[in-house]
Image (cartoon, rainbow, N blue to C red; front, top):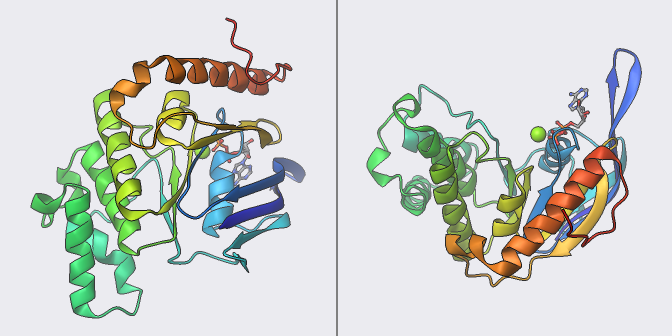
Amino acid sequence: MLELRGVVKDYRVRGRTKRALDDVNLRVRRGEFLSVLGASGSGKSTLLSLVAGLAAPTEGEILLDGAPVTGPGPDRGLVFQSSSLYPWRTVERNVAFGLELLALKRAERKRRVAWYLAETGLTEYARTLPGQLSGGQQQRVAIARALACEPEVLLLDEPFGALDVQTKEDMQVLIRQIWQDTGITVLMVTHDVEEAVFLGQQVVVLASDPGRIAARVEVPLPDGRELAIKHAKDFLELRASLEDLVRAQHHGTVTSPGTKGK
Ligand code: ADP
Ligand code: MG
């Protein structure tokens, strides 16, 4: 289980303190898919960078299976909006990158690279350079690279935000498939309400300024989901109420959770 206890994050900006996150308490069960939804500036990337161990909380603590997170580690895999691939490495060498830092036998490295390239539909691009791939394919490589280390938790920071709608939906289906195939824990942050609902088993809503948890709601949809579910009545109702909630948090007006009127 991943647990955030009383997490506060302050940044120093030109001698002043800017509170990005305030008293965040969150539990993500092993194997859960949790979406964190918030407007731009609500502290989503800050939250993920703390869990990834790229920065330390100002107050509070982060525990993974009871052990404090003190830095980056192979138990957490991170995928950003921009894929940040190594342009001079082929697709397979990008996927192998994290594995080279682990003490793995050559055969196991090869097995994992082949497996996660297949899982992300990239087998035929193994020897291709990232620059020759589309944006969606590049994100697949970034996902394969994160998965290859077989992390306990996959951290996704608006991973499909830069993609066109069709590619984004393909990627959403892919990430659900991977989650179902591997049983991995996923913590995804996004500003996209539809995406948060389609992918998450639960959705946490962040309020802005400072970022803090405003609500946590169950997504009452089956685990096996196809894109068509985005048109279902339950889906549309939850989406509408979350849109209202996000809007209210962002503008600082008080609306009770579940309010649906437009
Ligand atoms: P989001 O990912 O939801 O857009 P961020 O976590 O990037 O939000 O930012 C949350 C708040 O913290 C914003 O007000 C942002 O300006 C501020 N912030 C983020 N990173 C830094 C930083 N390195 N230094 C100073 N302020 C930062
Ligand atoms: Mg961000």
